[in-house]
Amino acid sequence: MLLTLLGTGCPQVDSRRFGPSQIVRHQGATYLIDCGSGTTQRLYAAGSNGAEVDAVFLTHLHSDHIVDLFQLIISSWHQGRDRPQVVYGPKGTKRYVNGLLRLWKPEFKQRTAHESRSTTAALKVKVVEIEEGEIFRAGEMVVTAVEVDHYPVYPAFGFLFETPEARLAISGDTTYCPELIEAAKGVDVLVHEVYVHHGWPPTMPFVEDKENRTVKSYHTSSDVVGIVAREAEAGVLVLSHFVPTRFDEEELLQQVSADFDGPILIGEDLMNVDVAQRRVLSWGMSIALGKKPAAKKKKPKAKPKVTAKPKATAKAKSAAKPKAVAKAKAAPKPKATAKPKKVAKSGATNKSKRTKRS
Ligand SMILES: [Zn+2]
Ligand SMILES: [Zn+2]
View 1 (tube, helix red, strand yellow):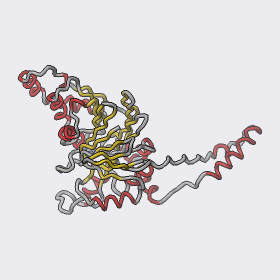
View 2 (cartoon, helix red, strand yellow; view 1 turned 135 degrees about the horizontal axis):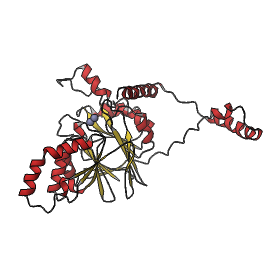
View 3 (cartoon, helix red, strand yellow; view 1 turned 45 degrees about the horizontal axis):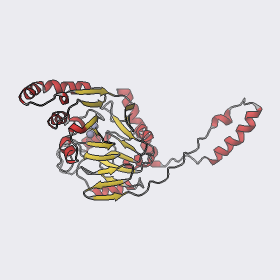
View 4 (cartoon, helix red, strand yellow; view 1 turned 30 degrees about the vertical axis):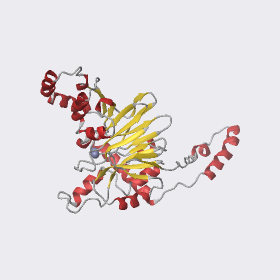
C-alpha cells in the first residue's frame, strides 16, 4: 500500500503546501482522499491522473477539502477517462456535487458539442453518501469511515485503509477524538492533521488571540497530536494539513516527539510512504523507518463483576474466585498521567457539546 501526500496545507495559499489531499495506491487501484486546491496538479506530478482514480473519499465538506473537485472531473475527461467518478462523502455531498454539475452544465454542453471525444462518461458522477462503518471493499482493500470531532462541521470522518499486510489511518480534520484513536489502534501509519502552536506569524493580519483560539478549537494542536499517536500505538506518525502552512519545523518535531517515541514525518507535498514496508520513497531516496515495535499486550481487564456476584454456585465460586483475584493482582494500576487525562476530558467536552448543539 503506497500513500502519497498530494497537498499538506490548509485553506491558506502556499506554493509549497497545496490544499489537503492524498492518494492510496494498492494492487493497481488508486484512491483519492480529499480534493483540496491543486489536487489535480499534484496528482499528475505523483505519476497518476484523474482518469486513473477508482474512488474519491471526502472526509468532510469544508471548502479546503473539496474545492478542486470540478477540476478533477473536467480534467479526467481530458485525460481520457471513460467512466463516471465515484465519490464517497458525508451527507451533503450529493447536494454539493449536483450543484456543481448544474452550475457547469452550459460549459459541458458547449464542450461536448465542440470537442469530439469518444465518451462523456467522465462528466457523470456517482455519489455515495456515507455513515460510520465499512464503506468500501474492493480486492484486498477495505475502507472504514470513523466519525471524528470537527464541530461545528458535522458529520466529519477519518478513514481507515486496510489490507491483509497494512493498516493506514487518515484523521481528516478533527480535534482530539477518542473514537478515532480506538479505531486506529496499532495502525502502521497514522496521517494526522495538526494545528501548529505558536505557528501563526505575528504579521498575519486577521489573527487576534480570539480568532486563533477559534481555529484551534476544531483542530488537533501540536502539543496533543503526539499523545494521539501514542495512544493509538501508531507505527509511524505522518503530520499533514498544517495550520498554518509555515512554522518552525524543529520546534514542531521537539514538541511532538516529547509525547510520541515512534518515527514522526513532517509531511511534504508528494511524499511517498510505503505503509507495509515502513519506507519513505521520495526525492530519489529510500528511507527505512526501522522495525515496528511489538504490539503492546492488552491490559487485562479487571472484572469486579466476578467478585461482586454474591450468588455463584459452589463450583463456580471455587473456580472463579482465585482467578479473579489473580487477575486483579496482575492488572496494572490504571495509568492516569496528568496530560492525557486532561486531553480526554477536553475531547469529551467537545463531543458532548457537539451532540447537544447538533
Ligand atoms: Zn481542513
Ligand atoms: Zn475542516
